Length: 312
Ligand SMILES: Nc1nc2c(ncn2[C@@H]2O[C@H](COP(=O)(O)OP(=O)(O)OP(=O)(O)O)[C@@H](O)[C@H]2O)c(=O)[nH]1
Image 1 (tube, rainbow, N blue to C red):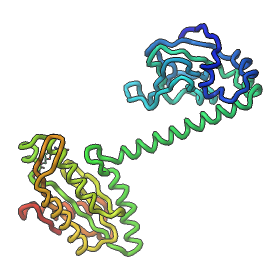
Image 2 (tube, helix red, strand yellow; image 1 turned 90 degrees about the vertical axis):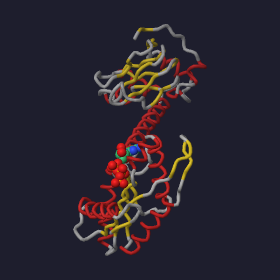
Image 3 (tube, rainbow, N blue to C red; image 1 turned 60 degrees about the horizontal axis):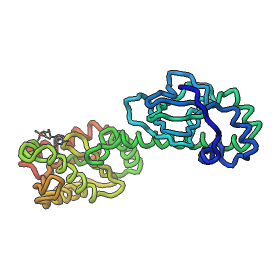
Image 4 (spheres, protein in one colour; image 1 turned 45 degrees about the vertical axis):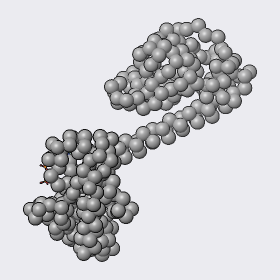
């Protein structure tokens, strides 16, 4: 980073959030505390490995923020007028992210020793800084929420995954047992799926899995839970449903797929698929594993009986 020549430009400063509504008389004085610096494209401005003592205001160029590693996708892009380093500047700790200039950039930087001066000179600037910090906290919370949701989702079908099934089973089994209600599990497996892939291609197989997920999900109640359990296996939890009803729901699901003889996909018209289903009711003391084991052996029977049918 090199010192740069910079003349305050009121138009440019209008866009700096930190200076918004700061009286121009105090702004002139405040700006004496800042130094202008140039960054080269690719230069790392902040890194979790280096303690940060500065607040940076981006005036020209672009900065990207990376969490964990510079090899990850950036979590945000900072445009002129935005700040970087505000948290580590205040708590005098290491930054939690990397901030990198993606193009040649111009920043104003302020050393943390000037912080008290600044606050004394302009309560408005203090309020602006607090608002910026609130934005960062909310942004951080959004990232946590998104990554938790993504960790529970299967990217191909959009169904929940096995990890989420473990979580939801604990909740639903406890709730149903407490209320003296039944809970049943359906385990579904696409029939002859290896042959389908071999004949139509793996991509076609992927679309068939999406068709299965979509068709099944559309027929379930909000309180039912469906997860992609493995490659071509899906598990459905049906809370407050007894054995008879679970059988008829499973049968309806099976028929709905049987009726799709072909479907449109980005790789052209493809034949539909059928599923075999194993059904098992929850018993007292059942763990997810023991319930799955019984649904799986019912599924095995359905495969033995010729497929495209329900057992259990
Ligand atoms: N296209 C695609 N195929 C997958 C995916 N996950 C698993 N498979 C395929 O699913 C096939 C499952 O084959 P098998 O376990 O032999 O079962 P099957 O051919 O369906 O035979 P049955 O279950 O006995 O009817 C394998 O060829 C896997 O490669 C996926 O995400 N996409």
